[in-house]
Length: 189
Image (spheres, one colour):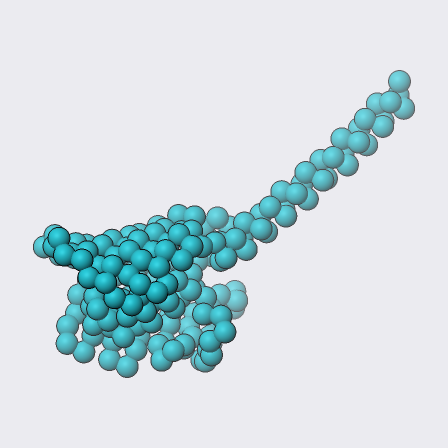
């Protein structure tokens, strides 16, 4: 009887060790998945300036793999909806639709020559893969604070723990005569 109890206890201990290991592996996968996850939503406040004007808005950006759905709300109840993929986007505003190349979305909307495809990476605090990056600054916790890419200086701040991963909640992007600041209010994965 005692031998049977010992074998059962040893079996349960081994089993609980396996369960703990799987849980840790799942947590590590979850951390990796936040950065590789292509389905996410942010809610944010944005402010911007181009060479001629300044503005601000609220933003809801839903990214579903290569497709984006962006709601912008400006003062005085001005609303713009943008949907599209990596190549073509549609702007809907005042019951009018305009089709344009996605890469030039920021230029069409607010006069910023910001590379739209880079934003998906920069919002997560990451450099765009396979593109040159300069002036990389990392803090003592190995969090990216600043880098330059495609003629823009990207500053990341106010990191918050989202699903066991630190993500920037403030992203400032400065070009030659332009700037854009996102203050992220929430992330969903």
